[in-house]
Image 1 (cartoon, rainbow, N blue to C red):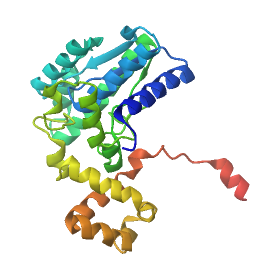
Image 2: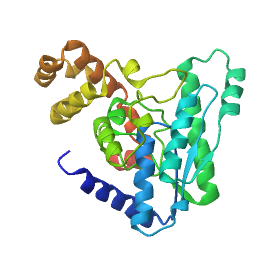
Image 3: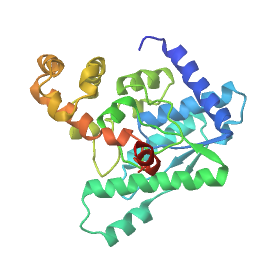
Image 4: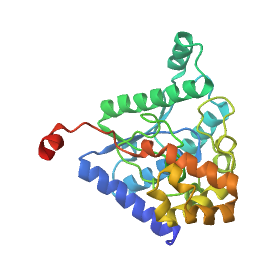
Length: 277
């Protein structure tokens, strides 16, 4: 980052307040997983309320464990709420999770995890309707670039204040905002299923991933090429020389194959056909 953490916090909290004003909302709701991303977003939202002299009770943090969620995650989320006096509520999705498994016993751990992610978002939007609140997103740039999220699950939101911050930026910001050590020191997890860890699934540490992603972002030509074309490109070879063939191929395949998650739904436009004729 080219700016100080203090300035970054000011810019993000201003963005949060401007977004609320622009959309005409006074309340916010977000899911608090016990992980570092949602912890940072919760504290940024609270600071935005304090800066604008709004009641911090208008920020609601929902704790939504499933039947396989780590008990430590729930404990960590509660510790964060206690330390920073965050307005929070337990809204377990355990019954929904178990009902899904009873209906679809053949579902894989990933399919079950994606269902739970969507049930959490459905729960958030239910509470948003109760309190007339905007749903705040908690996905960082590293996750968004890799497509590491569930469509209409954790990727759904009214706005996202950390979407341009890499995971390594989130760690720095978390320390600055005094996120508890219990959250800072544990392995990142989307909590999709029992014992799931982000870095195990991706195959690389976030420090390595972020370094790669920053270099990838600098090579604009790669971003406009198809996956087949990328492997023949000189910029791909440059990345390969730095990060090795396996890592370069693996991460670019993830980025390209999951790009659709960052795009709006495509709709058939009959008027454009009429204009062409």
